[in-house]
Length: 332
Image (tube, rainbow, N blue to C red):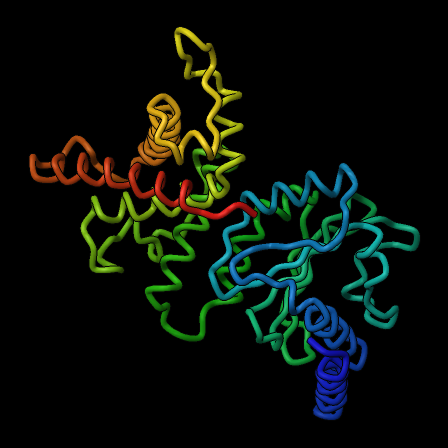
């Protein structure tokens, strides 16, 4: 985004803030929402719909909070969220005249999360995550007015409640598309797999693994669509996968010892390396299926003979396609 375009965006926000004040909004509240919208507009090129991001290097405590939010925050695919660590957050504060939303006392330290719909900042949420004497909580603004507030005892309480508050106050204005359903379901399961979290919240109404009919696919097709997408994101790079497989130490040649997987060996079709790489993929796939089974979404015990055959075929196909994606991906 060029500087000229950014200046134009910021000028539009300033003009909008003035219009809100002229329409009767509290100048302090309207000005604060305008400031938040300006921050989000400035960060627009970094924002990722359906994910929380941060653009700063984080100290230990802030890093722990961000990691928790990144793993557990249940965001629809049209929601953006930005984590502002203490030092950055403390440079972004409401005017003193806005007493009702003053949450951080002078010299207090607190991180923030800014939440809104993607490319639509008419309604924004400001989440304060400081410890007492900071007043932890969530403030919701719309068109220059304070729509509502939630207060909590601790920042942990805020983080635990945040997903629910977002779903209530930032509902989709339009019907979800199949693409939205895919992004939402696969983001949820990836976070679960990456964090080894076995009870991560999910809105089942928008999950294709809970309701394959959302994509007009079978239950087995839904399982392996999810598995393949997750494997592709967990195992994106050949060299990293080869190193991980080597470090795991599962594969040994009686004559040469632990097998080292290399691009050259795979391209030459060396049997032991090909087998080791496929076995590593199989084990990762089995772990993902075990994780999925823990959610008790799929009633595997009720599969028909036809389902079991389809499951076996899809399992093998997923391994083959994941292997091909890895070995055919060019070096970076």
